[in-house]
Structure formats: C-alpha cells, structure tokens
Amino acid sequence: MGRMRQCGKSLRIALGVCSLAGLGLALMPLESHAQLQQQPQKQHQQQQQQQQQQQQQQLVIRFVRDPDPAPELKAKDVNGNELSLEAYKGKVVLLNFWATWCGPCRAEIPSLIRIQEAYKDRLQIIGMDVDDDDEEQLREFVKDQGINYPVAMTSVPVRLAYGGIGALPTVFVINQDSKVVQKHVGLFNPALYEIEARALLGLPVPARVETFEDTGEVFLKHADRAGMLPGVDTSKLTPEQRMAALHKLNAETCDCGCRYTLAQCRIYDPACNISKERAAAVVKESAKLPAKDAPENTTVPASSEPSGPADPPKPRSRK
Image 1 (tube, rainbow, N blue to C red):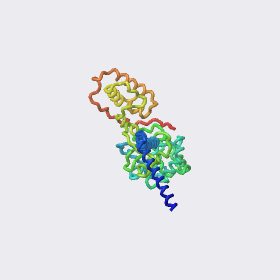
Image 2: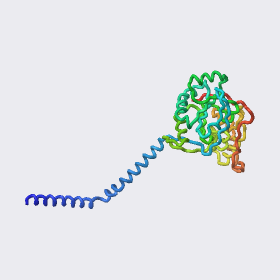
Image 3: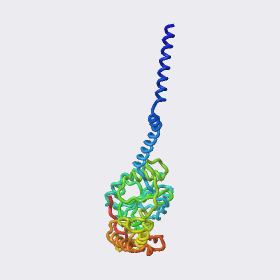
Image 4: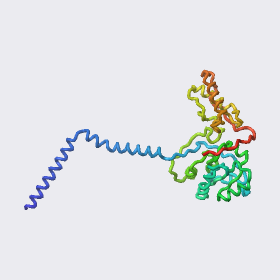
C-alpha cells in the first residue's frame, strides 16, 4: 500500500514537471520560436556556401564548343611505319609537338609514357619532332628514353596546318571523332592531359567540364572571332570604333615576316613588338572615327592561314 502511494506521488510529480515544461514553451518569446525555425534555413545556406566553395576550388577543364576537324597528318615514324590520324579514329589522341633539345619537352616524356601505357587501348599519343635534322639520332633518343608511342619528324606543311607551332611543347587534344578540342602551349602538368583524356572517354574525373568558343587560341583562322587580342587595349573605343579596329586588325598583314594578319600575330606571338605597335596605332586611328564611319557590315572579315609554303619560324621552348 505504501508503495502504491509512493508511485502515485511520483506520477503526480512527473505530471507537474510536464505541465511546467508545456507552460514554459507556451510562454517562450516569439523571437525564440523564430530562431528555432531559422536554424534549418541557416544550415541549408551554410551547405550551399560550402558547395559553392567546393565548386570554386574544383579543377575546371575546358573543351572547344564546336571543334574543327584535326588537319590531316601523314608521315612515317622513326621506324619507317606509316602514321596517320585516320588510323586512330575512335581513340583520344594527344598530338605532341616537341624537340629533343627542348628541356620542358624532355621533362614530360616519362609521364607521357605512363599515360600511354595506362590507356593504350583507348588513347594514342603521337610525338611530332619539330626541329631535329638527324633522324638516326632521333631514333636513338626514342630508344634510350623507352618511348612507347610513335614518333615522327614534322614536315613544314604539317606545322603550318597546325598553326605554325611557335613554342614547344605544344599538345593538341583530339577527341574520338578526330576533332581538336583543346591546345596546350608550354609545359603543363601531364596530369591535366590524363584528366582531359578521361573526360573525353567518359571516365570519372575530379573536375568540372566547361566549353568555350575558339577565338584563335586553338586555330589562328578563328582569330576573326576574337573580341579581345593580347596586348591590344580597345576599352576606350565605342562599339562602332572597336568594330572598325577589329576589321583593320583582321585585314592588315603584319610586317614581322610571319605572314599572318595583325590579329593572328598578336595571338600567335604576343611578344612581337611589330604587331603590338601597329595594333596600337590602329586602335588610335579608330578612336578618331565617328560612329557613322564604322563599317556597315558588323561581321569581322574572316582571317586566313598564311599563304604559300612559308617556312615557319624556329619554335622556342616555353616553360
């Protein structure tokens, strides 16, 4: 009987505590209720911010939106075997223009060998030697380095077809449809080549893929699409004056001997003082034009590749 009274007393105490708790919630200030409701919203905002930061920190790889077909390449490798892009259609191709004397070119060879071995069934690296004259020495170099992909000496027509190859190494990334989707000039981390190849092959990559319009970065013939050129400041021009300047820059040939237009030369060789000074003069002249004197046709004249079999300048090594 005493136990029942004790249990009843405990029950009354528990009910009293619950009643007080309920009364406390009822009397809680409205601000406290609002804070409780805002907590999930704040957590959601924090998660969004974290996701945005992760996206900003994530590696971004870029491919040409409407890529051009890769120019035909026919040659014989150092072992006398026929070499052509057509034979590798359906594979991703890394077309690597290089030279034995180029330090950055030699530095990336071990990584290229590893990439070729890892993806040999779906990827093909082709080494195009640009500036070595002795094929026998090149053959020995390939053997000594253990290069496991074909290497050939580059002819002038091939160099011109791929834009002249002004710096080494230069790598063209070609997709499985034999279209050029990216171009890298200078020494890059070979891991980038591997990530790009994996993305084209539909394999998982730790990167976000974006597309861009080729405005001469890949093929100089598309320099006429560029609204901005290296070392050319058109920020003070009106839209009409700017269009007039771009017309002139895409129509006038540079006098440095490259046989490119001024616009193409600015993209091909930003260090060229001749095209830089002449481009600055064109911008200055265009600034004096009233808007009505701007060309009626708002389409910039199409650029063209250099005419004739001009021997391209000696490529330079770029780190």
